[in-house]
Image (cartoon, rainbow, N blue to C red; front, side):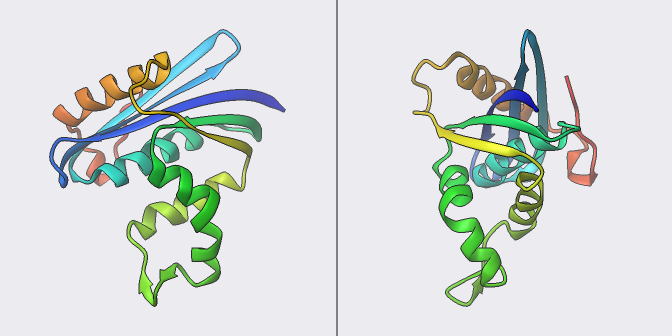
Amino acid sequence: MKKIQIYSDGSCLGNPGPGGCTAILKYKKYKKIITSGFFLTTNNRMELMAAILALKAIKEKCNIDFYTDSNYLYKGILKWIYDWKNKKWKKNNKMIKNIDLWKKLYFLIQLHKIKWFLLKSHKGNLYNEKCDVIAKKSAKLPTLNDIGYNKIK
């Protein structure tokens, strides 16, 4: 299987407010940047969307090292998601927040072998910093993503 690195970040200008998400995929000497902007969203949704867009872009089963600075995404994947699924996507008898995105992410992570890494936010990791800058720019320029259009650079 191919070995891929993914770096992702989400940004929101206000919470809720306009948001952006970015992922950088690295394979050997190749890099792909995927970014989207949304009119009205939250930071947590943008963190999840960055991961979803990155994993949707991979067309075959891969070994992935996935780097995020989001505790929400990291803990959600490694600690919460399987429990939520077993409890019909509920926590304390209430539907979990962002259930639509967690369900998509759950499906996508089954397709690959993924190791998750939590980065300290804005602490000098080049690709984490690039994701942050691009996600903020995308948040300032929302596109038609809210109706299904994704901008890929």
